[in-house]
Amino acid sequence: MNDQIEGKATTRRLFTCFDEQNADVSEDQILIGIDFGTTFSGIAFACLSDEDPKVIVVKSWPGMAMNQVKVPTIISYGSYNEKFSWRSQASDDYSIHGIKLLLDPNQDMPSYIPESTLKSNLKHCGKPAVDVAADFLQAMYKYALERLELEFPLEYVKICEKKLILSVPAVWSDKAKDLTLQAARQAGLHPVALVKEPEAAAFHTLNRLKNKGVAVGNAIVICDAGGGTVDLISYEVVQLVPKLELKELVPGTGCMAGSLNLNNRWEEMVKDIVGEDDFYRIKGDKCYLGPLDYFEQVAKRQFRGVERKWVFHFFKANLRDNRPKGLFSDTLVLNCKDMKAIFDPIIADIKDKVNEQVQAVMAKRLSDPHEGKPKAILLVGGFGSSEYLRSELAQQFPTIQVMQPNESWSAIVQGAVLSQLPQKVTVVSRQATRHYGVSAGFIYDAAKDEGHPKYMDAYGKWRTRRMTWYIRRGDTLGHSHKIRFPFYRTLQDLSDESLQFLVSLKQCELIEAPDHPDSTVEANCQLVVDLRNVERDTFQKKRGMYGDWCWDVHYDLVVISMPAIMKFSLEHRGKEMGSVKAKY
Image 1 (cartoon, rainbow, N blue to C red):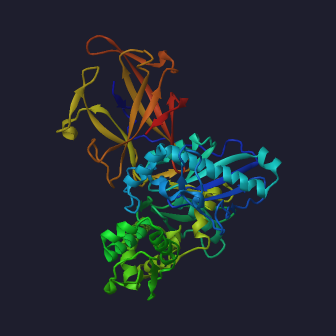
Image 2 (image 1 turned 90 degrees about the horizontal axis):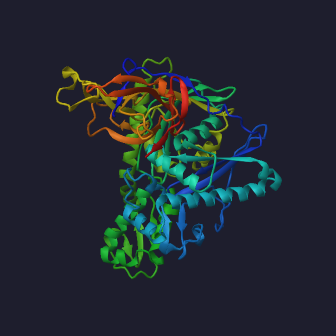
Image 3 (image 1 turned 90 degrees about the vertical axis):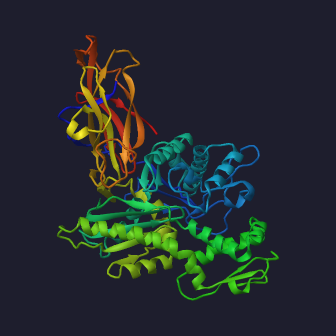
């Protein structure tokens, strides 16, 4: 039978505080943060036994000569699917780049890494994306333990409980976040917490700035620009001492305007200059990979929007000269105008998203006693360290300080660790980024439901499907609060099969969600409900329209809003009857 919405409780929303920190936490605990990025990944850790825990960032990586805070997210399998190698040991022919992107296939894929190429490499290694992600996370975690054993006595590392914190893009779907947790579970990692990447960056950055001019009431916009995604999130400072407390002001937004798109635009420019035949002849050869690496490691990072020549040497490529476009003797010279042509479309997308966030913050604070506009825009992430991006945003927002904090590239992984140190920083409330609800049967009302399909229920009453949105986009969600969805379900019998069923949780990305199911309403997940442990005498027994017995069972689906995900449970008459599994 279909679920019906509880009569007078359709608009009721009960909030009960559930503090995830209530569980006993061992002082002998090590927090391990992993920033699993599209192009680069990082590790940081902290020990709770320290009186004032310090976050330590891993800067030394196997196979890499230079110290840096991240390692390329590149995986390579051999002929027999042995464990993958780090970047310098990976086979260029069968290396898998950007595996993270396939964990959220519904997102627009950056054209620099075509989905077909990713899937081709996956087919070669014979593993699905989740399994490859699990292998990478397992190896990162194992390496984190190796670094811990270099930092602390072996006996201490062995006795300490370890907790893993993974960062995920704010723009990711709930399904993608669940797949990330699934990959961690497959890797044997437990317990695991998730944190949104821009939120983690805010934790690290604002914690460092709290005694340096940041005041209670200040609004800060965080722009996390990485390789694949650009995430935006805005906070108001609620408290500075004894710990930093933040509240999210408006729903976070984002787009797939990461720096990988710059690589694609550079390649398109090279193809236009050298010609398609020569381009595909040299692509993948060392004479091409050298200039590509120079663009990635030098030109892309150092471009500031001022006049300068950028020289790319295609050694022994035997390219035909194209002097009007800067190609002569296998050497390509690009000027500032050329580089702007590569950067500007991507920068424009980011500027639009930042402007949307700034305007939303100002609109939210119109009646606020604090100054309406944000105090600062903080750029973090690899692309966030671009001076050209900073200068373009500063030009667009002349009255708002645009900042590039030190350690911006490692801000996310450090903030991931800080997210589990509540004595340091806490987010007291967040904003829902989409609508969540259910489609359920309501008594048919011609004034409201004309034109929509109707059906007859077990008691001979006409009903129609309407949406009930329990969480609306822009709703303020308290930290780890419970939200109850009251339902009742009419059962034709009390068999075990009837007492186990699925409830479809719906979502909508529009500003205003529709009253009836339509094409803008999408499935979020299927909730597996099991009522077998509920006492049968609590069911309401009634005669159906044909005289047969029916049973109405009333229950609450409970959603716990966590920092980056939702957890579900089932309650009957106020008593928790167990967790509810979500199938995405």
